[in-house]
Image (cartoon, rainbow, N blue to C red; front, side, top):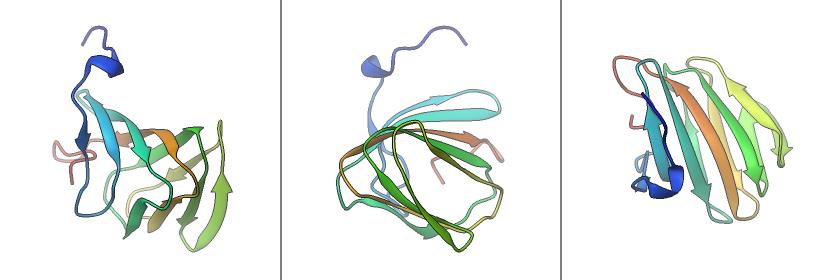
Length: 111
């Protein structure tokens, strides 16, 4: 609860077994928001999870495959992965995103 400053928060690789997402996580009671970075060519391997997820591109470009459909997303664009929807992301250039995940059994990005 309260106010938070992402720049002052510790940074980490949030899902090293699935991706190279690196940044800060703010965890609440039911939702987690990550300000995450991918260098060009990095991303998340094909995976799925029980958490619903919305990822918004702040800067850069991502190639996203979601449920078999592929799109390129730029600043101000997002994708919404429903629980257990297969998805994959690849940064086409250095990219900054906000990733919001529901918490399932206390786990969000750290799955």
